[in-house]
Image 1 (cartoon, rainbow, N blue to C red):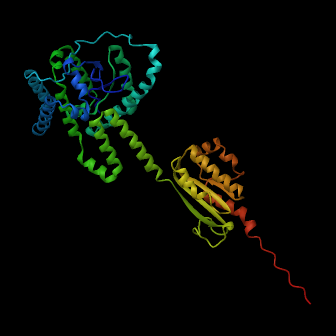
Image 2: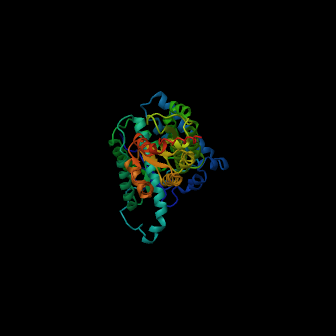
Image 3: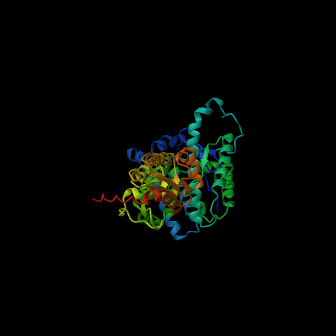
Length: 441
């Protein structure tokens, strides 16, 4: 697959987009003083509503229209590039008050470690951790988008993050800031026919050529024109069929997608991605925990161990064996709901079958220990069955296995039922003594 085309800078302190970052090389660029105040004030939909910038809107819409219509008419021609060039000519000729790319350096600065300040390392650690998460999420999201667009070789997440880390370690020595791959510029690369990492190297070579040769021309390009190209690219990336399928799968996922898009427009991409990721984690946790359940099977002391007699057998509770079969994850979110019906179980023998349990956390293990202790104190026979090796280690570490009587751990529920029946049969099947006959007169 092709590597990321271009990069996007993150300010090392606040985590917001820094327009000094130009491409994946991390070379710093500056906005022109003419449009800096307006560009920063107009960030986001809310900023535009309070202080609309009509020339910038017209340039953006014009570039957007040319890019979209040109892609339909002649996809082979670089209409976005032509639209940006035309917008630059119009903005320069009409002297429009637009934010421009601004001055570009004519070469790479000499490497210098002068930015290193040992006294600020501890203060920057929290911000560095936040940036690490954001850069990893955006880079992996970009790589996944490239996979979906190209339909070719799947990306290697570890290689993506390793390469991104090496780049971000090197660029500060040349005056750059932390950079990530971007979905829009990667999509432009793929749509242009990129099929290998050679496309990324070509892109980097062209960026270097522009910096060294055509910097004065590029400096006059309006940022509004670039925004139109990015919006056009994002529009072409929208998969309407996938959105419809997402709505049919569940309202929760569709709502998260809509909220993420709205936050991207109203606030910024970082806030949108973090919010969407957090909500997706909550939704996934809710979906997973909904699968946790417990099945109660009553087994008579005498009879086939594999045959249950239903929740209301004819035998008395003291002559029954109850098997609680747990399934799904037993976590802090499900422990109370799943284990609540197990506490009042009246069976003479209680078997806790964990064979289908997919996960155990500390909260669930402690709650399970309370269940075992409750039934042992009332004199019931308690067995555990189906405990996997990882779960066994956790149960042993928290002292649950030590609280069980010797020989109370079994591989299957059937073995536990047979052992419980063997212990209860001498008690339940002992014949009662016949009453003595009345004395004869």
